[in-house]
Image 1 (tube, rainbow, N blue to C red):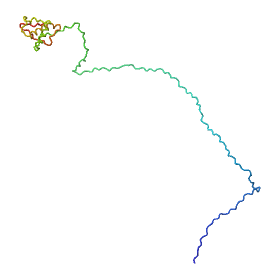
Image 2 (image 1 turned 180 degrees about the vertical axis):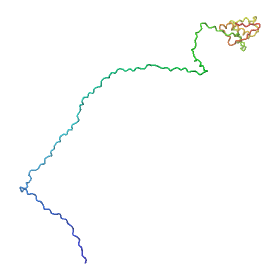
Image 3 (image 1 turned 180 degrees about the horizontal axis):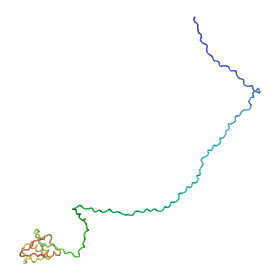
Image 4 (image 1 turned 30 degrees about the vertical axis):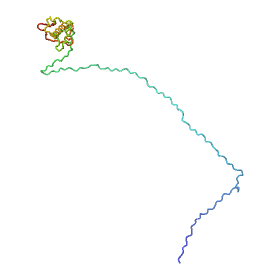
Length: 221
């Protein structure tokens, strides 16, 4: 038979035994017991903290009076006069440039103001109308009744109408145009110096050809 192994026994640790120390013996041999009266707990004592005062900054710090001396007054300096040089304007020299041979400079052109003569003291000659022989005759295109009325006006205003009567020198030719032309011309020649005109309501006109005939002469002034 084989050998049977038994299991190992459990391990136990035992702390070491320290011998105890006995308290020291008292001197009296007995411990006094506490008193029999009840113990009243005292209230907590409150100790007030002293106030802490922080010193504030000073209200104002007087600054010392500083006197700054003012600068001395302006120093009067004598006026300074700088003499200016005399104003002398030097004109450029005039050089006579000789002209080339064969060239003669023309004299400068001078413009003179116009000469105004006073008006003449002699009165001007009278206005002379150019000489032109004119006669006043009737218009051939005007109707006979209108010419007759204009002729009657001329005869009643100073014209020589006796010459155109049946016994007159200018009766012939016996036409209304001839008789009216003689009366118109007689009136105009006698009144033109005073402003008379050869109009007669548009029935007359001026001509430069003498309307006279052999037996009748048209007057002219």
